Image (cartoon, rainbow, N blue to C red):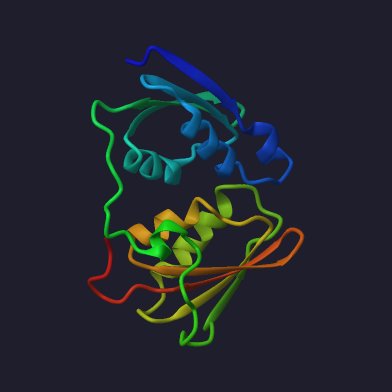
Length: 180
């Protein structure tokens, strides 16, 4: 159990079409020893759970009604340190080198959707693609929670900001045996 909780309500950010991941990471970085984070969101942010686990946090969630969720992240007894051999791409998810990748064989337009729908659609599409195939996805915001999920499954991603609220993400499907 933590000594105290810091509350972060990202519902206004999500409702305005924004991406709250940077604010969540800033809040986590500012936590003092023993503190936890109480996160309020408009959906159950399942991909965030694995990101936070890697940072040494366990979670419990509760549906508040109306689609809203409360997630409590508590520090685990031992913080998990990042592996020293972590690559530059792993340190900056979504920035894999796409030179030499095949042209996209499929394109998804995920603009105008509220989270987590764009991520769910993207992950479902990848399941039906062959290793080495490239998926092109269009988003209203940089899909920051998608990248760790892609990395876990062994896929690579390259994001390009093409406009004020427009992102093109290329995803190369994992080669057999590359999932982490």
